[in-house]
Image 1 (cartoon, one colour):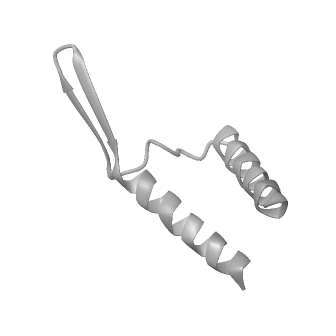
Image 2: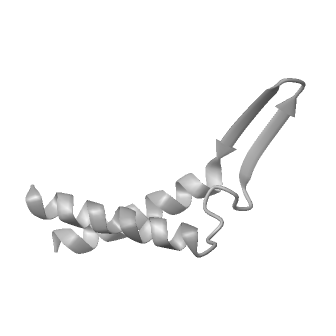
Image 3: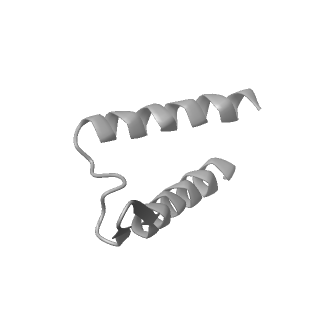
Length: 64
């Protein structure tokens, strides 16, 4: 459990560094924003897929 928490913390720190360097996480092509009057709906499809693929690869690598 401790090893998992350390790896999760390092992964979050890595994502933070990438975002601070200018990676447009959350504003990728494929992320949809719908605006109607006073209502804004954000649907991060591409960002969700990217995060899913990265986490799947990371966890499959760590299980071996």
